[in-house]
Amino acid sequence: MRESIRFYLGSVRHQVSGFSPTRTVLDWLREDRRRTGTKEGCNEGDCGACTVLVVRLEGDTLVWRAVNACIQFLWMLDGAQLFTVEDLRSPDGALHPVQQAMVDLHGAQCGFCTPGFVMSMVAYCKTPGASMEDEAINTALAGNLCRCTGYAPIVRAMKQALTAPADRLDTQTEAIKTRLKALVDGQTVEIAGPEGRVTLPASADALAAAYQADPQATLVAGATDVGLWVTKGLRTLPHLISVGLVPDLHKIEPTPEGLRIGAAVTYTEAKEPIAALLPDAGEVIRRIGSTQVRNAGTVCGNIGNGSPIGDGPPLLIAAGAVLKLRCGEAHRSLPLEEYFLAYGKQDRQPGEFIEAVVIPQPQPGTVFRAYKISKRFDQDISAVLGAFSLVFDDAGRIATTRIAFGGMAATPKRASATEAALQGKFWTEATLKAAQDAMKTDFAPISDMRSSAWYRQTVAVNLLTRLFVETAPEHAGTETRLAGWKEQAHV
Image (cartoon, rainbow, N blue to C red; front, side, top):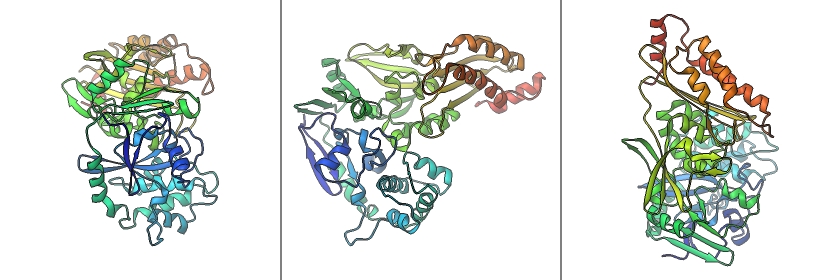
């Protein structure tokens, strides 16, 4: 067992021990290393001023990810290569192509947000197949806020940087690979200090043993939620156990049951495989947090925190996902909708953790749609999220249906009365009206800062109309209806 974390900052190897389990990367950089180029803005992962670049070796490929240093705990750097804005400039004083583009095209004024933008832009330059299209660039930079310059010159700078030749970091590729390979030792890490301890299990078996030994410990995957408990809630967490650094849980694989997504898989990694099964889900995942948040936050962590407004669970419930739970050596499977018992309460026993979630292959004739409603397009919490899975038989009737909503109840919840109103029916305006009436009995939403109860109820009913408009055949004849469904369905 190792008693320290090991990682590289720039070209310097660091071995750190005895720190608080909730020490953030941002605080360590600014206070311990005096790297003040990384700024503290919102301290909750929204503004991007603290963005840094974390590089890991996956197989024989380096993966470059922008993350928010303010809600990343220091121990999460174990085995990684970290770069900050101070690492970009060449020894001879030449600016990095991204920095030079920001100068050339007037992408900075006050400069407070600029280091974070630069690091996100460098990460985007390292993305295979990075697009020059405005929409793709806007998505990549949605987690960085500029309060004075405006985004147009920053986007122009991004386009110029994408045309630049290889930068100085590219010349270090083999050296970085060698460094990271040398850090792999397969050991569990246990770090204890006066303010608590953190356990970094080397395997799922080690995680099961550690959590069974201390069921009161806090499990942490990406810290996009737990990080705020510390920076905003000022909570003391005496024992943290890592889920996100367990190699066994960092897998996406097809199985006879369906697509299995391990508990350490981030939304960035899961987006394309999920979208391949559920095309509309990809668009919703694109709007979960920001690039930095999706690079750290996990699919299973979004389930585990039990939020009634988490965007992932309604998608997965509508798809019929099954949760894989483990306690010690005991394993069990649970339909995802049964995991959520009440607000803040889930069907998880002491010492039990989520090992994976499995999404079954859609049946022939399945139409899947998902809609996120929020005040802003990017980086906003849902007021309502509706996910719909309809399976049509050869006659064009709705054979089975699964409808799930977030934001409409104390937990993510299926619309059972609405499903019953659709079952066995042709998708007509009369069926739509019956389903809309049933929807009003399925939920009794509350009013809060995101929206009123009336708004939520109205929107949920209207989403059925949107589903109908997008998917229903234009004509009433059976043959035309059947042709329409076959065209719409993912057969």
